Amino acid sequence: MTHDDHQGRRRLKKKKKKKKKKNTKKQRGVQPVEKGKGVATSDDQLTPEMTVQTLLKDKAMRDQAFECLPEERQRAITKAADQGEEVR
Image 1 (cartoon, rainbow, N blue to C red):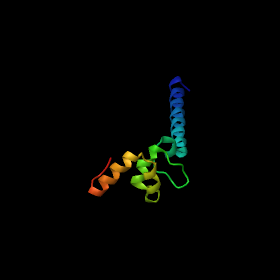
Image 2 (image 1 turned 30 degrees about the vertical axis):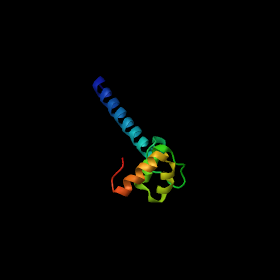
Image 3 (image 1 turned 120 degrees about the vertical axis):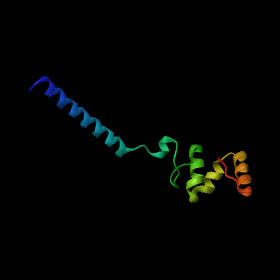
Image 4 (image 1 turned 90 degrees about the vertical axis):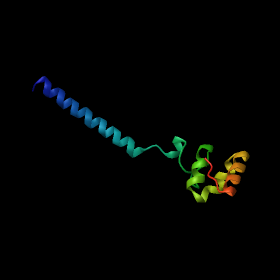
């Protein structure tokens, strides 16, 4: 066995190890709640970061999400909805 063969095998082992580590991270995954994004479910406590996403995506939680918004924002959304505009 030459020095070059040993280096090649080592490189392959490192590559496999790195790939395996990457896959386990994907499998574990970071939950949307931890990221501060995503849509709340009925079991989750609604946070301000999730409010807008929830308004857009989850019809069942829409009322609760709307109530979590500041009054000023609620008025702006209501006014825009009445006029048929889109609020961002």
